Image 1 (cartoon, one colour):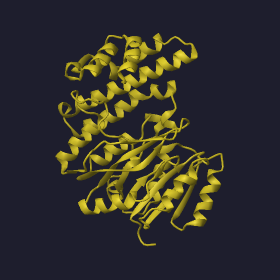
Image 2 (cartoon, rainbow, N blue to C red; image 1 turned 45 degrees about the horizontal axis):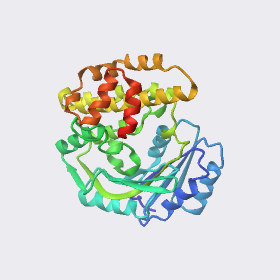
Image 3 (cartoon, rainbow, N blue to C red; image 1 turned 90 degrees about the vertical axis):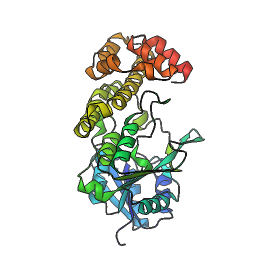
Image 4 (tube, helix red, strand yellow; image 1 turned 30 degrees about the horizontal axis):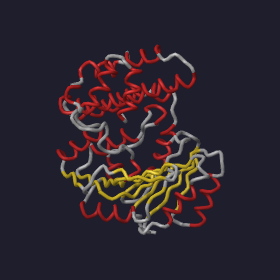
Length: 343
């Protein structure tokens, strides 16, 4: 096969229950000029054997067997061998609609885009819902437009009625491989910074001249309670301050603080909220005292600075209420009010 149009990188780790569904959705893509890179990240179940069998079934499949290092580094291993004009990322417990890569590739070529993103379909216990980040397709062309998009991707301004405006995951689109290689962009380890997707996307967007966001939904995100993104632990949230520092370092390297600071601070507030929810929930389940752990979180400089300086008065009422309760350390009252308000 000549140069593939899209390289699809699929990290694989102990997903024998879901892997067939994922791979068949790639085999049956209407865009045939793709390569499928299955990165076996030291699987202990039948996933490794299944990957080898898929390589026998379809010549477009490449297999990488490696020791377990996590999702971010598995994706890096795929990038090292990818040959496509664009690269895409699929989590092996998810699947994609059959026209995803044809439609996004055609759109990317038409707009001469560096990145093409799309909405997503969420599957949970047999129920599906579409997350519509955009109701109408948008083209962000030129540095100013891409910069504005990038900051809203980090988090919106205080007035916005949600903490998140755009999905943060890399699996919903296509990325120019030439841009990635020219700028030597790679994933960090989620074991170090919790979320490997956001720093990667920031590195890409900071070097992009055109980002397209399609209003179509192609990627099927399947809730798996055992997946990394749904695993709650003290350790995961203890790493959030380091993640915040990694994001801020990237923003600081390119922008004046006055341009990015409110976006960054709202992201920090969202992460603090998730951290405190997690701390309270785990402590309640385990019969532990949460006071000392919460005090330690509040004393983290990245959280303390934001709580002291963020313009809460600009937020919609229910956000303002919830975050002011956090600011004044009324966590339990916040915990129950946030549930009532759906926050």
